[in-house]
Every structure is written in C-alpha cells, then in structure tokens.
Image 1 (cartoon, rainbow, N blue to C red):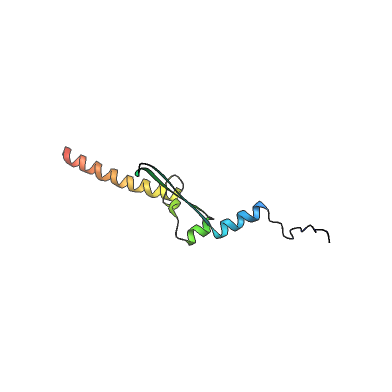
Image 2 (spheres, helix red, strand yellow; image 1 turned 60 degrees about the vertical axis):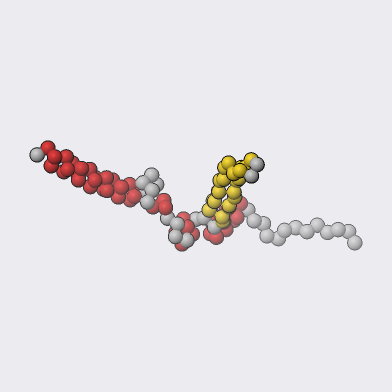
Length: 98
C-alpha cells in the first residue's frame, strides 16, 4: 500500500493566531546572567506580557491610564496637581514678600 498524503483539514492563518493570543494573553520570560569566576556582573530579568487591552484590564493591568504621555485624562490630572502646587508656592512667596 503506497504512503498516503495527509492534508490539514483546518488551516490557521496569522490573524487567527493573533486573535487567540490577544484573547488569552501570553507571557514571555527570560533571564540573562553574566558572571566571571562565580562573581555575578550583570543580572537582567525580562518579562513580556502580550494581551488585548480588555484582557489586561481584566487582569488588573492599567498603567497606561495613569501615564500622561498615553492618556489625556492622566495629563489633565497631572496638570491640575501641578497647578495646585504652583498656586501654593506662589502664595508662600507672596507671604514672604509682605
């Protein structure tokens, strides 16, 4: 009996794989250690999480909401705090001048 060629019934494309990864999330971890004669010179720990925004929020990861470079709400909040601090500083300086 000759060998039969088996074909994959289900074909997965890159978009399907990306959708699955973003839906479930994936963690890539690695450590780099450089040492000479049992003396550690450099230790680097690398942790990478790839997930959709919804999945990240579900996991409690939302640092981009507080980053003023990524969120206009965070920038407004940061400017408001800076404005209050500057007003207090101005009041102290004016009080010293009187």
